[in-house]
Image 1 (cartoon, rainbow, N blue to C red):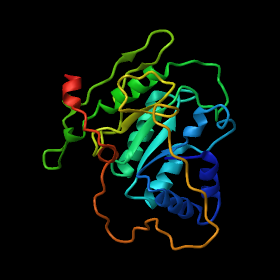
Image 2: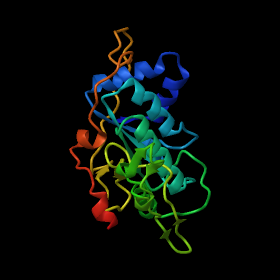
Image 3: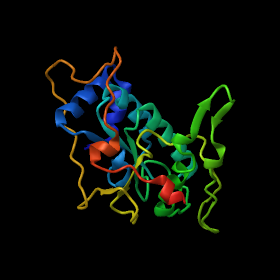
Image 4: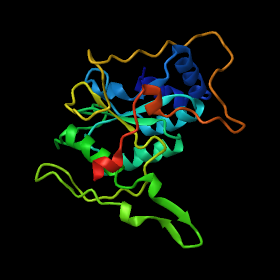
Length: 247
């Protein structure tokens, strides 16, 4: 299901707006929510928009059983910053986050630079794999935090028109191995976990807000919560064998 930017902006600028938006998402029956995907459409994505990662953080706390896809395009974004931001968010929301990569973000001014969204996505995924979570030893007596031999640089060189990213990332991989990597329908990314949008896999709309007051069904955790499924589990995706890929 997709949540339009207009609803996100309204939610964060209205008292109680996040809880009200979370209630609408719960009412839809969807378990996975795409945040900011309308910015990929020229007709709906013009103008300055709310950062999808900020909105996802707020909604993720209100909806601890849902998964989230954060919409990002290479327009005015660098893959290292996106990789670190999304992976950090995945840690905060306990493995319930993925990235939805589009070709162009119409919500920000065009810088004139053109970047390949497939290379953008591949660099991000490569960075996610530079620091395996199970390399963290945490041996206080020996003074060893992590097995540094398993933390490897990416050393990506995309040539004169591409990205040059050495890595590694400063954040280890997450509970779900790595965030889900989804591609919008206009991005040719054979390695994507799934393709969304248009005829490939249209996103269901957000239900309209109701005028009647009703008890909130969004979660407000006040006691320790059970471990919820990761986004990969919600989508039926397997955890990638990063060790085999890096070998």
